[in-house]
Length: 231
Image (cartoon, rainbow, N blue to C red; front, side, top):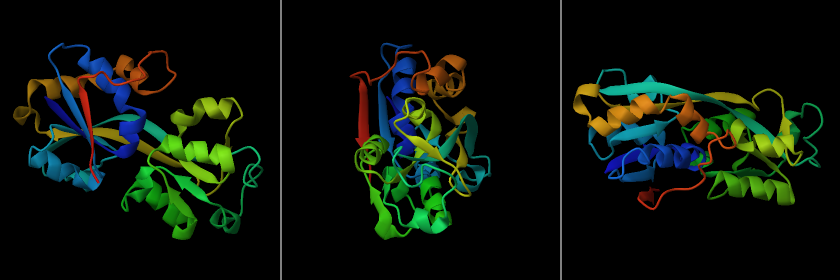
């Protein structure tokens, strides 16, 4: 059993492709995926509650004392998107207009120390204007159905942007660069499957599998993958 802790965004957008491709390399490998805030990654790894943690971690959140191995593997952009008929769709919106929009947000927004929450604070979006959904996909669907704005990972909305179903809104504080990292115990203390995944996760084939629409047809979990959501 390989136990993976992941941020909610990684679990939704990239974990299915990673886990299916990696687990297909070994018939006897079972994977358990659980969702946690990145602030718990160090605790989960050091207590051996999980074998590996994946998300927007950093040395400042994980620690730099050498007990945790940290490797970045995929950069991404968090962008602001709206429906084409939104008042935000043309030009650079004024801060007051941003604050008056309904913001339809995925579960990442519920993490106080997360990237989405940091962006919302920077934009001074009132909590009364924020609606949090069970997934980024549900938040996007609501934006396209009734309007409002959302913060999304760029590659996850690339097709909708290209098709004109969504519009990328630009302006100060509306975009943010991010990077997913893999965190484990020090190499000498981890099981072989963990070391194999650490080496595999940054390969071009694996990156393609994690990014939707990149040419590798991985769209679902295998039955041997167990998904656990932790509040």
